[in-house]
Length: 568
Image: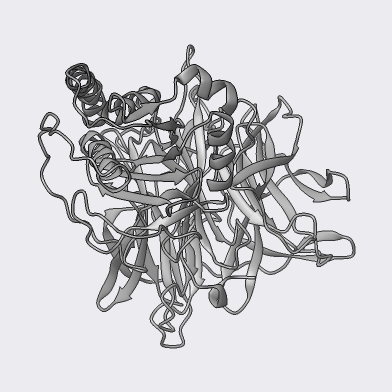
């Protein structure tokens, strides 16, 4: 985190140096004379970042303006005129919109695009649109592995525009030191890092990064116009600490909704026009502290219920509840439940609702029970046979080794991934920690004033992601200098998603997503954007907030499968 902050400060200084240098070149009158100067509108780039880099939005416009302006050959339309027209434009911004804006501003070209920064990974995606449609749109896409690559990318973009659109050679700008080359391979489907691009007819979409991309790798030709099998998407920011996320068809329209929880509120959103649109939010009862959310159609009426695990703010008891869509909104169909709820996906069985109880001095009582819908209510069946120490959070079941034996995959207290055989004996344990949750419950012991804090384990999803007939394990991995060091305090500074596959004699990581600053609080797998493909969808907490600053979370989706493999 400190390294990223330092690089951000350095980047600000570099922007100032480059802009001053470019302004000096502009004042010297570099550029060829033209009878009729071309007018260019520069639209502020869309920023997709996991931290506050607002200064870049202005800096990109200023830098492109100084680099593209060529005395009587190229004139950049003023910011005030551009902003006044953009206020009346509906989003998303696309080529059709660009031509309309250009026509109103009497321009010949409109330049727009996006900058995506996740961790140290940087991608610049832009389009130079000919308003009069005399030449095809110039698509530009560059990637880097360091935040320092932003300035060189913008410089290269300006150079390509001048050479390909205006046919003008460009004077060399100041040289920016290039950082060490990094090569990371994200397998299945070779990479999960991608950048948001701008579809030719308006849909903001994602473009895959090729395998083992070096710094400033370049792709030529048209940009993809749809999310690929290695796609990426990031939502708008929410001023809340997201504590859980789940996916499901809430209203029975055969489309997936996104459900997430904060400390007290349940929010339901739908993916529309490349944004999450809120369709419902509860009133946030003061006596509730939410620690988990799950979605499944247990009662079989075609509308998935929302199972909310809630602890009374006294910390002494559970007061969970279940919500269901009634045609107008979500209404509780079960309240004051003294159960932890969790839905797990079991191969060949689908989604299974589980429950477990607690007492004041014990966070988890023995017995994890599958639930069914019987006689108009949720009823527990016989308890599962689970290894000692495994509770309702952080386990799953599958034939991991493809030998006909159902294994239990679970986190231990130290967040190591463990594999247990049907007899409950541990067969394997990871050497490194995965998971890492900030959600916890407390228990009280006699003659002790301070309650004991028990951090909950993250989910474990089981899915055959590469189509080889073997089940893979998907888990988050949060880390930080404090991490799990203290019993009552946790702090994670970065996180990523990882996929583990059984490669005898143990599990091996076959891909991981780029590192995010902050941490991953929860995740789900499903077709959240209703495109026929499954995504790993994470609740990403970028900032926890302070007394003087707001928390900030977002939802990030990583495309995984082809349409035929999507989970229904």
